[in-house]
Image (tube, rainbow, N blue to C red; front, side):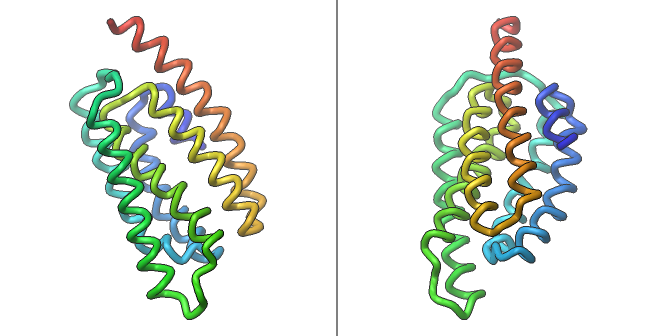
Length: 173
């Protein structure tokens, strides 16, 4: 939670904490039934690490451009492919399609959002709102009440991030 608050304040230590936290979150997700976590969390780990590296060099808020949408599309595609591989290769059960989509869609939004952190798009906070909603649904399905509460907090934080970064973008111009 601290990492998210720091990123909201454009403090790069938040990206570093997020990078480390990804290892812990991925392990917990996997142990709680998200078999795709073994393939998807490394993507998030490297995405957060690269955002940390980029923010060390520059911190300029960008308007949405083609790169924003390209990153979102790549994130969704990558998530569907990796989760399909995980669900078909790492499980001896038939695919539970509701669970597959409840995991693959937010992971794809997360990948796209993470790929966009380095470019500092204020509108990326809207992606995190959608992501948080899916994570709430996913964690209810997995009966993980602690994570459900965490993502409710993240939802409010993303609202604050959007408002703050939009205001900062106006002052930047």
